[in-house]
Image (cartoon, rainbow, N blue to C red; front, top):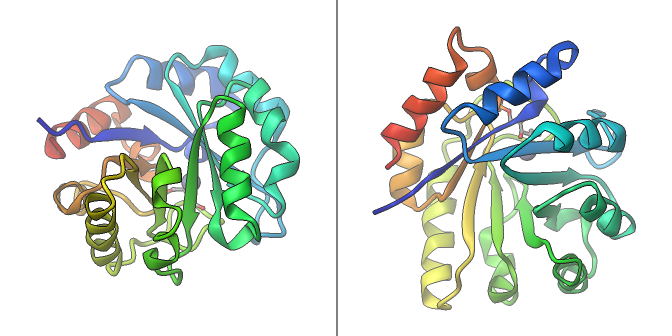
Length: 219
Ligand code: DX5
Ligand code: ZN
C-alpha cells in the first residue's frame, strides 16, 4: 500500500504560538516537519534561522525535513545536523558541485535532498539520481508561502518517477508549494511520496482534521 507522507510547513505557523503549533503537528497524522530556511539572496525573502530551528526541534517529535533556500549551503551542513535535521535539502540551482554537497550531507548521517525550481528540468538529475534520497519538486517559485500551484508539476513528477524506476533508485519525490485537497490525490497518483502543505494546513479552521483529510485522500 502507498503511504504518502504529509509534511506541514512551519513557515505558515503562528510564530508567537510556535510551541502550540508544533504540538498540534505532533498530535496530528502528519509525518514530517517541513522547515524553510531562506537567506534573502537565493530567494527574495528571509524566513528564520538557527535559534528558531533549535526551538522547533526541542519540541518536535517527528522527522525534521529542512529545505535550504540559501546560496553556498555547504557552509552549514554540520550545523544543521547538530540542530536535529534528519533530511537536508539543498537547491540544485545553488550548488556548483552538487555531488560533493550530497556526499557531505550523507557523511553527517542525514538523508540528502535536492530541490528543483519550477524552470529546472528533472533531467539535470539523471547522473546523480542514485545518490539522492529525496527530490523536492517546487510547485511554486521558492520564497513565499500561500502561492498558487503550478500545473506543470504533474508532468515533472511523472518524469522523475520514470527516471527513479529506470535507475532502480530509492529516491523519494516531494512536492512543495500550493498543495491542497484539490491537487493532493493527483500528485500522489503521479508518484509523489511526500506532500508539503503550509497555508492550506495552518489557514484551516481545523488543521488536525485537514492533515487527516490530506492523508486519507492520498493513500
Ligand atoms: C516556499 C516554501 C514552501 C512553503 C509552502 O518557498 O518552500 O515550503 O512554505 O507553503 P504553501 O503550502 O503555503 O504554498
Ligand atoms: Zn519548502
